[in-house]
Image 1 (tube, one colour):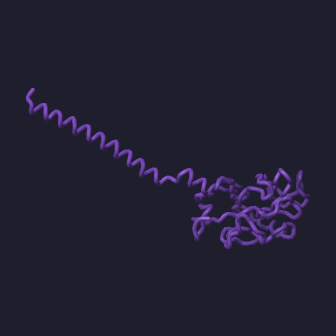
Image 2 (cartoon, helix red, strand yellow; image 1 turned 180 degrees about the vertical axis):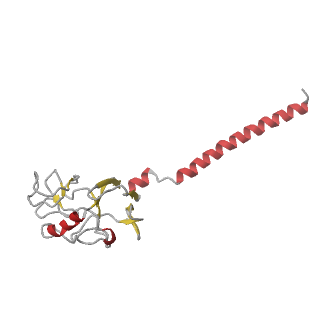
Image 3 (cartoon, rainbow, N blue to C red; image 1 turned 45 degrees about the vertical axis):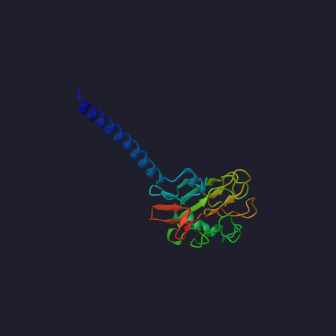
Length: 204
């Protein structure tokens, strides 16, 4: 084999090796760029907003999502559920959410329904009792039941120490829980898509 052919062969090998290395580097860079578009676990733990699709949620049903490591309930209330709030008005300890809260009731939420005026049927609340941090159980059926009053209108019962909340997350009088369930800042992207932890003013 001539010296010229040996040089060409060497150049070809060097070119192939260089291209291969460049390709690997390019893929690594592309992977790094793609990963920057993904919210990190640290960001999620810090309270990154959560988008929720409630198109499958039927009246009378509730779904739970996680935000800031806490359960957030989304309840689609029926007309009967909404009507019950007037009946519990004089039975709850803080009907208009005046007490100091971990999260102040957002200014765009109505006092009785504790929801946005344009979406009164949707209750969004943190599912943690304000007494010792337990998670209450849903007791939507009205009427007498174990551990509940005979005139129960539907709501939530904390099994730990018996605190009860109506269908707006308002705590009943003379219960261990000192305040209503928190309502996080939120906004509707559409009738079926909600962002929790962010509203028109920015993140909570």
